Image (cartoon, rainbow, N blue to C red; front, side, top):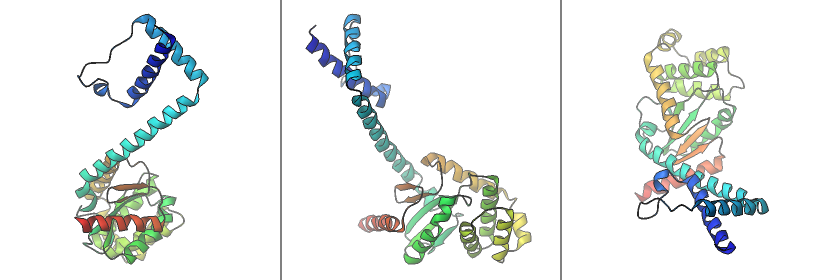
Length: 263
């Protein structure tokens, strides 16, 4: 076998090896469904030697291949995430007990997963409030996702218990806690009292199984969507992990509005 032929085969083998990293075993076949041919021992050894030397001489090829694979994985990951969002659309936007800000029944629904102890969530509160005040056709569904500390859990439970009393009390508590510089038991109690809540009822409601169910459901939904941190904002089929500027959020809302109008 000539050196040129071996080099050609080495290139093909190298490409095939890289492809194998990104493809499931079931896809590593030709159009007939048969597995690809294998080289005999001597040819395989020669090809491995050529590939090894080629990579030593051209190490950038490895970086390029890894970057190409990562880019493909990012595209595939976003596609799967969009599919998961579509499959969970009712749970995201039409869950009856989810608290929200903005116009009730508004046609455009944005979803935010958040934690009251999250500094990035605190940085987003005024952006989110301004959004629903500026766009009367937008409703912001709020998914309590306490992940950072035990006090996060306490704050989320208190918020959901207040929502059982009155949507306005939830709104006031939600905004106050996310605007607070720190989060502790004193801050939580003070914010709850400031809403004018029935504190005895609040204490009873904190123990309701419905609150546990709601928080567990939010955690399960976050896992299905690949959400690992807060904030996570969903606009249509787009998931934005972390903070987003008011301008970029307006752009995404505008795109969602156009898509809805085109239906």
